[in-house]
Length: 360
Image 1 (spheres, rainbow, N blue to C red):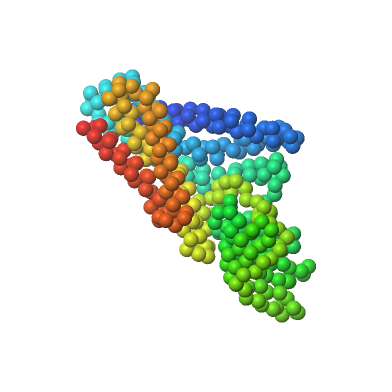
Image 2 (cartoon, rainbow, N blue to C red):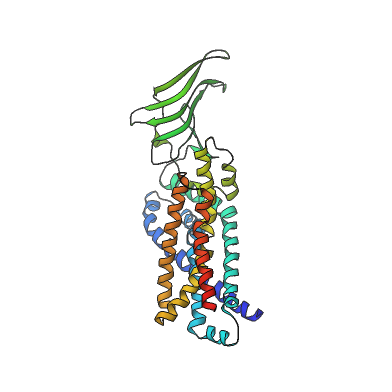
């Protein structure tokens, strides 16, 4: 059995490596032709271009890992079935469960590797690629940072701090703007529960404004609605694409403990559980893809030629369900943990049941 496990494991890892290499090359080729003109227009060096695309590989691996694990397992079992090795193993009294066990164990080990990449490698590489693309190529500089669910920005005359649930909308929560003098003493600060930008000015709702009127003396005005003209507009608050990818898993977890409202806490948990669930999505897909291969072969007499497209369609369908659950979780319609494990449980259990039926 040890020899059989090593043989199956070696084939799985070889197929996984080939799939990752092929999809990375395809992704980079498309990305290269989309972005190379931007680099050349800015006169950037070849070294910087190579650095950008090479450091983008961990992000590609993160995005492609679930489908690669699925297809690696399907191809490994499909080759065994196509060459009649699976029939020979069953004839020797080896159950299907022992044949697919090395594939499932290898898939679990791959999940641990991908989680390690998400924790230690991905945040650093995404931070560098965002810096190169946004600052060196696009000429856009992020004036602040995103930490613990809040944005912190340095403006021309003061500092901003706020929460922004939807970057596409100009609605800000728990907003504050402060100005300081040359000695770093506070000149003024305005805080508001809700702030909206109407295209011409800022509209502040439910807050207070403090201004210095003397040494260590401040006047305070509580307001329900206030119109202000800050030096910056929402367009100044540039947020890099994939900015949450710059945070490690531990940093995403820490962000769940520093929120100021239940809605933001729920969104932070959704980000944390969502990152983990996507990285591990390949395992339940693998459990379902293996019996689907055997079912396709038994019904239509075709294995890989039909099983691979069916597996890709199944993966796309499961990804759509996962994405829908994540959207509902971020809007507090369902529990973030339930959204993260829902697809895993349904797909994984379905795969286990089908594997048991195929082994009977």
